[in-house]
Image 1 (spheres, rainbow, N blue to C red):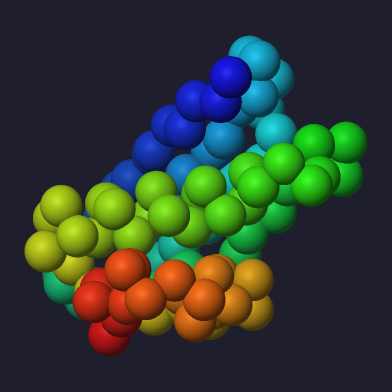
Image 2: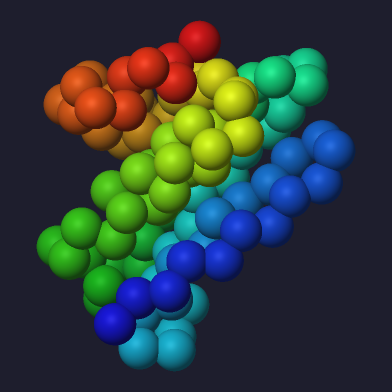
Length: 94
């Protein structure tokens, strides 16, 4: 079972993913004004690889943007690839 926690302040934030209670990875972002943020890094511990956890982090970021009327700039290569492959989240792209 996975759990995602979101930490945010006025300059940056991160989404952390936990797998069976253990921190498995994170996705970090930096605010670019009040209405958009830049996803700059996504990482998952190699021992949790292959389970789609990094994708869950990117999707959580997209859901947060959609719910809060924000836009996303995915500079992280992994996040960018997730946005390119999933048309249903492209509406939050800046």
